[in-house]
Length: 170
Image: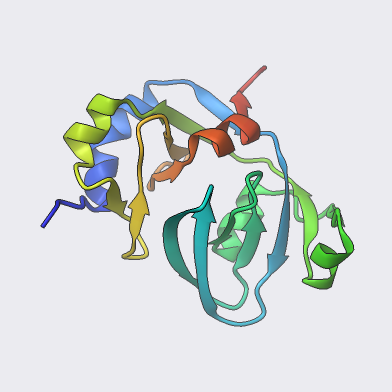
């Protein structure tokens, strides 16, 4: 059986590297909708299953820049997006699903994962997310931790990071 480190182990291994690196701001406007009932979001990006995550009523379902859908807790959404000023969805289909567009306000510390990082820390190509499901990891992806709060880490696929984040202050 291939090793799948926990999020806590991943955070312990990378926390000081992340916190000593640059801060990035999320600059993309995202489609999001508040979930009315509980469910499970299966996140697929570029045809690859990334993770599955349960969500509760009051959490938010988002659509990323690469078309991937993912969920975040309601309190996290309110910290990382301007919920007071949503805009209309880009399409009638998204509007019909209840999506609106929200400006991001979140910032992260981010580390570009190398082949050596993946070989040393993620030999099975994933880590166990806080919701107890594997989270896919590849060299070239970014490992991120919320700035300034920390406390968690997550992977952002390389293309999604490139189209979503910029160095803070740029």
